[in-house]
Amino acid sequence: MGPCDLDAMLRSLPGVSGEMLRLLETRDDAAVIRLSDDLCLVQTVDFFTPIVDDGYWFGQVAAANSFSDIYAMGARPLTAMNLVAYPVSLGPETLNAILRGGAEKVAEAGAELAGGHSVDDKEPKYGLSVTGVARPDEIVYNAGAQPGDKLVLTKRLGIGVLASALKKGLIGEDEMMPTIREAAALNAGASRAMLATGVHAGTDVSGFGLLGHLGELLDASGVAARVELAEVPQQPRVLDFIEQGVYAAGLRANRDYLAERVAFAATGARGSGVGHLDDPRVLALFDPQTSGGLLIAAPPDRLEVLFAHLTAEDVEAWTIGEIADGAKGRVTLVGSRD
Image (cartoon, rainbow, N blue to C red; front, side):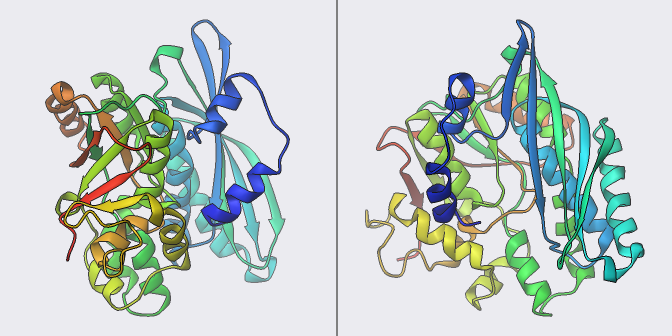
């Protein structure tokens, strides 16, 4: 569901109160329920349609994506439950491969697979409901970023574009495999590095794209940001495909929803300026990510320590910008094409 439709739907639902109201207002990544003075329960759920044809890798990516919100909050997963929608007419072989891929990822996360639920549906869908735990002082919220913080991203952008190219027959799954493996990688190491460093805020990058999830972090923190386009990592061929108009409808929906919060350092023009938001490097920032990386707001004096921990965890990462003073939620892009 696109961000505009989701906003309208959420506004119609009954209200909640207490800590859960704060988390919903800031659109944080997972529900946090304090069980005692030193223990919190962290819960999330996610599932989606296939982005690749291979059932095993679909299961791997979908499971990794489902764990991502837990890791973004600094929590440790305990249990996972399968969510399956599958056409019975397709037979059991592909579903077996999907569930095997998911189960292996659950085991890699150190969690217990605790059952699940399935329905007969016209199109396959798969994901997990995940429960984790953390101490209250370990929780990393998307609120708390401060001017001067560096923005660190731990996975390349563009899997949504490549999935669209795959569906159109413009790229093969073999060529896309490095991207699939990156998407299937758990954000566990990045989460541990984030906790060991002590950062101000964090989130993961998924369906609303880099700018959508950065925008939520900025809104929750009451700050703005600058993003260096040249520093944002892209998967191979992504910009070429965008130039050809190959991308998912979700990219355009994210762009339309977020355009008003984007500015350009080169001209000072609003995001609606003709010719700017159509730059492939800018459009890539709206690409819906499936199992994207963590986006971390780290104090500048801890940036070196953060990268040392990320390196120790064998996690590649990039500094893509910084938190700034300015209108809440505004993102200034630096290095855009005139």
